[in-house]
Image (cartoon, rainbow, N blue to C red):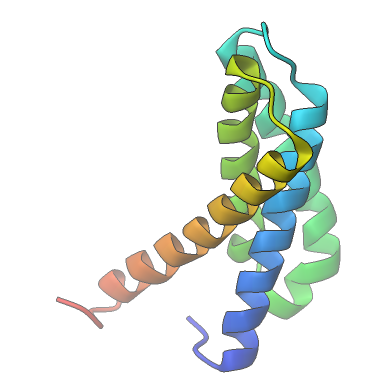
Length: 119
């Protein structure tokens, strides 16, 4: 995995932005009272659509996994959350950005474990 600062900051920024935008889109589509599984499914579909748009723009610079994973996770989790309670735009964007950064950290940790860089 790339360790140059350009990629690290770029991945963090792109994951936070894509996760936040996915959160905004999902919170706008899914409303309270929906079944959580339907909210999660709609969120996952929105996340897939957002990842496709993100891949067109960001994939040449940062890679596919760093763009696709946070959008899917943010869409699914925020779809379930929006089905349970009303989310404001700032909540949805903030939680989506945190999910994006969390997904990036998980990918970095799992990759380091697989490559034997940590015991």
